[in-house]
Length: 198
Image 1 (cartoon, one colour):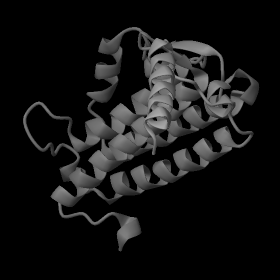
Image 2 (cartoon, helix red, strand yellow):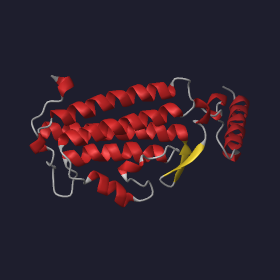
Image 3 (spheres, rainbow, N blue to C red):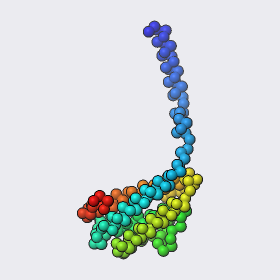
């Protein structure tokens, strides 16, 4: 390659690098720049997922002997029963942040975490805790069914964080899986095989 061509190629490269360095923002492909719209089946997909978690949570709670409901992995951790009731309390409280009213009989107030703790620490038998869990899932699913795809892009305040309704529902379902995993670990620690694994 001649010296003249090397200089020209070097000049082009330097000009291109200088132009890139002056750009304040990287170019964004058009597909990424457009807001992501929820598919028409998002809530249906989330609902199916919730139904799967519900069945597993209820089956696990029913598989635990009454005497194991007070078991906890360490001091300060939630007991088996408290995890069941925590999921139930969240199934009431979280939809309230999206506009669903909490049933008065729960005595849960979304802005008062002491009421959530009181709900979780109630002295109830396993069958009562399972009944509460089932009722809470019915409430959660009703709240999800009442939401519409057209509202999913609307912003809500979710524990002090601004996010879309869609992100809040996805976070709600993700949170359920966290406690399903916790419940599986609790069951296995008590030598209970999850019913769907037999």
